[in-house]
Amino acid sequence: MACDAEFDTSCVSMLNETLSGGGGGGGAHGGNVTDARPNILLEKWVVSIVFTVIYVLGVVGNGTLLLILARHKNMRNVPNIFILSLAVGDLLVILICVPFTSVVYITDYWSFGESVCKLLETSKDISIGVSIFTLIALSADRFFAIANPMRKLNSSMNGRRATRCTLLIVVFIWLMAAVFALPAATLSFLDEKTNPNRTKIVLVCYPYPRDTIFGESYPKMMVLFKFLIYYAIPLSIIACFYTSMARHLLISTRNMPGEISGQVRQIRARKKVAKTVLAFVVLFAICFFPQHVFMLWFYFYPDAPMHYDDVAHYSRVVAFCLSFLNSCINPVALYCVSGTFRKYYDRYLFCCCRRGRYVSHGSKKNSQYTFKKRQSESALLPTQIYTSCRNDPIVETTLSTIVINGIDSKPQHV
Image (tube, rainbow, N blue to C red; front, side, top):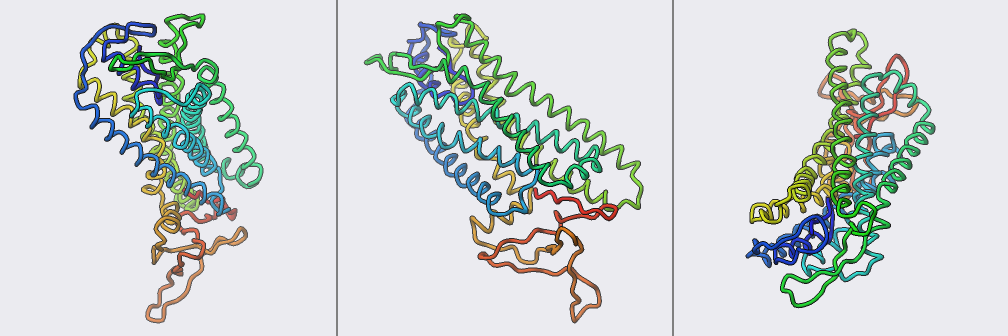
């Protein structure tokens, strides 16, 4: 019997059974093959260490991100609300799936009951759906912000209405992800298997029952369904958005009048946000591509269990870890590509302040920078504010309010 996609906790037990020659029962595959894992004990410890790093990094990174957005109102804009949704979805996997999966990887059997089995399978499907659907929403938001900046500006003037609309989209995303997770919530069950040593019967959490109306075809259908809904189709839609975005930027760069400098700066700021979203998308695609490739091969290639050798197994282990790594990598990417978030992360995690940052004192009614003249120089220079770790950070000028035709636009804090 084969494994589930993405975060299946029964995967190790299923492969143990297949490798030990006990895979002749139900499911997609059966047959006897030789054990391809002589270093299983070392592998378990290595994977356990990787899971520990993922857990700590995910909790700290995503938890700090939630703290930043909760404590600082100036960070609550449309892109960051979507990023908040991503962080909550990642924490769902980190807090629920990672601990149980790491234990199952070591023990090779499920010992937490059927209710926890259903909870885990449902949580991982919801998290996957929230992540990819939110990335679609973020890509669409960035496309409309760049393709029609004045319309985006007018819609952002009423901040409360824009926030309510974004929150409704987020709620819809979570509801849609929950609907797609219903098969896991209702059909996941505990299956009895012989352990690799053939000494006793053990339980495994398995999401694909045999008594559905689709019979033996149900696992294949679900693997293909998840590949299309959680990977291929969403990434194709995102690719269309970014292709159109790039085309529009090329055209607008050629035709934009030189005197509209404010609009040029606004587009540059939004391009930075678009690059951040693109980083999230690329990381998602890289992390889940090996897992989907393995699952499609294992379920749709008739002789896959017979060809499950060392290369296939360690490829599966790498894919298994990469799929979890996606839940903790977004805060790292955000720290690398966003100067604003980097400053907040430094304050909360490292208690260090980056001196010499140019900052803006612009208010809602006044977006002009504060200047002071140095005694030794005649030029006017932006005021440099040195904040302590105890004080709230100040918004950087690179993402400050920009005046377009006399109208203040809302900053993009990414």
